Image (cartoon, rainbow, N blue to C red; front, side, top):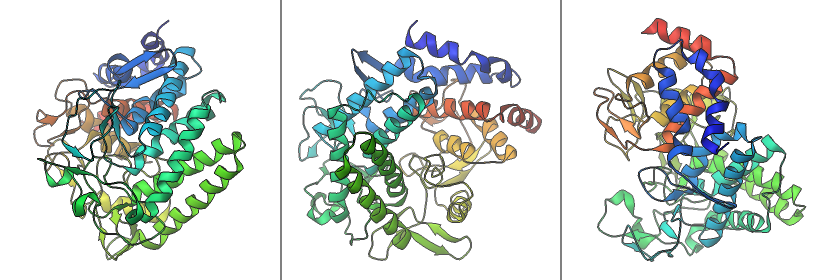
Length: 432
């Protein structure tokens, strides 16, 4: 049985409960299957996963696109696909740890005019802290799910060392070799100061040139990415312990503490209405950007990323802020309300953010409202999109965006596994 056939078989138990909401199975199944059906390119021991409408693999997206499959990795086909992806990600990091997106094969094609010129393997060299975090998170989750450590090869071990080294170098970005400039582009696609980005002071946090939206950071200590780095380093520590690499264990432990302390000292701000909350970005020079973005890691997503409990006081304050008009990228319309991004048209909402909101909520009412919103706004395509206009959902960006489809699949699977799906569907139908 092939990968797609196996996955379809494993989700069949959801068909009956989803039938209680007209059309929900018809959206869930293609969204859940979208990555496997349309983006996976496999060969022996190797998996390359495109993001959808772009023929390149993002370290972030490729991880997020398969996380909902990890629960089924007791199956040989699914396990092989995920282990192949872990191996490919390690090779990408070893080729260029500062790149965010890669080609399937080396070529002299360059989609952008960037300086310095990237290698033939690299699609884009925007340094994003989360690009180094997602592969570690995936590896640990796969290991915990299966108990299988065969993917911990010498190449993966080297990639872990490379990740830790870069995160440490970028604590003092002024001494870093990384520079990035793009010509003939919007300001959000390049870095100021000859490619070094906005000025920063040392805080213990690690620097990021770009957000998970691929937009340049306003202030380069991206707080949700730093908190995700703490979680990823905790994963690396456990994997290094299994590999009996005591030096790497100590390095991850020390770096984890330094980054976390930096966030606690510099990344929390006192808001007059919501109290102490996480800023989205800071620079260590006293500046802070209070907002949130639809893309993950976001402030809203911290419990989803296993960074903190949904009941953590600072997180709850932050959540109240980012889901209010105080967040400049929180939008309301006739068909939905939620978080958007400066990366997408003004007023548009990201389905990824709606899925994250549902997965980090304990409220049946809130989850039901989000389910209705997502079912009302796929514009008859049966797929999630990068963003949509909540006043006119037929206006949307990216018709083939596998990350968003995977997040919808994960949201429904979690509700089912938590035995909350029936209650959410019942309440959602009552709200129609």
